[in-house]
Image (tube, rainbow, N blue to C red; front, side):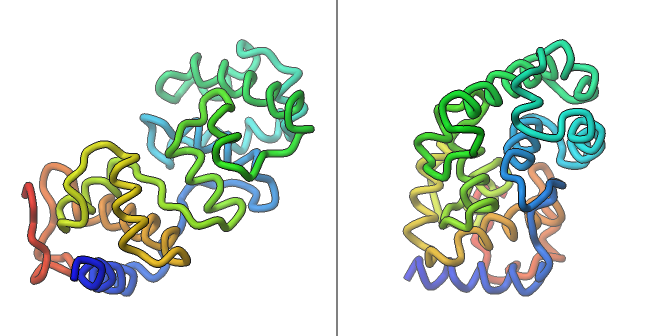
Length: 210
């Protein structure tokens, strides 16, 4: 029953946001660029990240170039972002680990990705799904909030929310669910004041916590 409701919600929100996709800018042929953008996006908007990455990637066009840099050299490119010093340090450490341990290639295995500095479970899920087409639904604040309001999970912990949603949706639609829930959370189902009259599932949403 819950799985049927989940599919109804996904179908309806997907129809409302047919162009939902990742909003970070990166070269789709270069998983390293996605890793950098995802790591920079923590506690920061995608728009802010997209403003700094073009110059950053022009100055350091490969994971090998990042590995040869120091955090102090990266910092000026990302100083407009929150926690920029820590992010610059992690990017250099990540690049060094990838060049030393993985031959300069981003590993496709999620467990290995999570051993890279700055890459947590959510970031790893975003990378394997968007870069390698593997079934995964990364749970950020928007995905978690939308899922709870729709009654698809009672959990707060992102890993538990991910497990709940992974059971409800077909594997081939997990990335789609990730993208449309983020679009929905950013544009309609806001944290403080959701725009329920504009919501495509307003009539059937249980509005839990609203």
